Length: 246
Image (cartoon, rainbow, N blue to C red):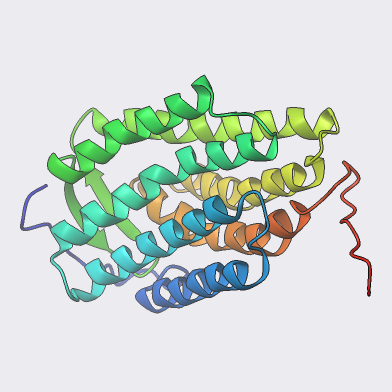
């Protein structure tokens, strides 16, 4: 990644939906949600994975803020940190889904982490990201030719895999059917609006990582308030085990 990345601010946008202020606010929300899960749901089977997801989301938002406000590190360093964070998200999501389905580490989980590892190495040591532009709506990244499409396929393939497999577990009324359903809802809460913006606004394609992670705060809320709490179940109906009062 070049040391001197292009940086610009487009003045003709007015929505400010993913402005630096919103980015920093999102960091606070996602870190707060991680602390909430730590405080209340340590017995959840997805305790560690859910916290990891929340902190990875917060890390990317912090990286965006760091790039746009030029704080602590250079844009080059922040860009690498941010992309490493969001690159791990689909793999951790697959692992969380497999845990809810009570499946041991299998070929799917291993493949998810292996493909994530390849991209992590590329973003950490390669020159995949060529430039960025901090607009008033989102952060636009320009990737080296040939990498953008491959990264898009990597990302959506594992997101779709998680949704489909979660649906299969919910339909089969597995033990954690309820949190699997909420996981699907959480995924769709950021995939659908981000994809709609991408389809309707051609130039927004380069800002898809920023747009998607901006909407991912909705997933973070669903994860902390629905997926994790409902994972503490003993029946597929989602009823929690009641403790006897002494």
